[in-house]
Image (cartoon, rainbow, N blue to C red; front, side):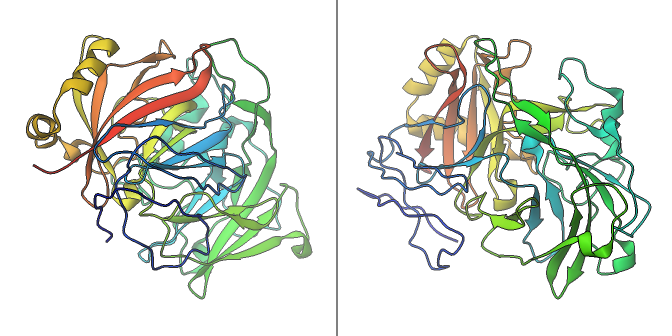
Length: 408
């Protein structure tokens, strides 16, 4: 595990899937912010120079009110990496303890298990699994218990007495006959329509249907995909082989191009991701009677990399919250807040921040909260969300401020 150390300067690096395994130690950000160059595959580079222990402000390049980008943030370096949220369809778990496949929550993909294991058979389209409903008017077709999406908390395996938990596509069995065909809704295009100022428009046209079956083969994933639901000849089935990479939580596949794409940084190189994503409409950890919808402006923590979030203080107003956040000395913050932070309340939940930092009925309102974030290496940061709009009042321009808190 890499150790974070104080430094006077830090040189930014190019990020890529073929990066060498031996990397320099992580260093604390030294201030000013990151200049990020972004491609569709999320490659970013930039320089960083701020003073140690000073607050870091991140203006995540979400891309405006259509929220076309997912933005990954590494708190220990200040680096951000933006990726268009429609560049991938499937994510493949790289842990050595299981074989799991995720569908893209950022474009509202959904999946429904079929009775057959024959991918050449016709599969009926089912519009009840389309996740394009208004969050204020949830559909009874989208109950959590149907398991149309992956568990938004981050659990891969189903939980006891929690129907709909775990991944939408069942764990890939070593026995081929146990791996069923799935109907896939391929999700929705990124909207290009400008919404009313202060609101968002994130869903475009439906991208159609497909059917998929995933097997294990020589320690790798074997993916069989047909970009339609009709009966097909074997020659029409597209087959892809996906290898695990231990440096990452997941590796990613675009089913349309058949290409692997770079999405998440390495598992130790990010802490938070600002994104639109499908999730459950509930304030509870789990509720089988709740529904599924697509949310804008979620902040996901890297639970598979060990990043956890604790809610700390709530104030009367955002102004009072920020004033107190700025004034409190780091040693006092450690003694009064970090020491008492309840990370066990979100011990396994990648929605530690989630949507809790904003007032949903008043979509553009920030709640007056502080948070403590602990990364996978045991470093602590105090964090506050400062804005979700730009100065013109347009959504999709979030600002997050955080600061490293040394152990006292």
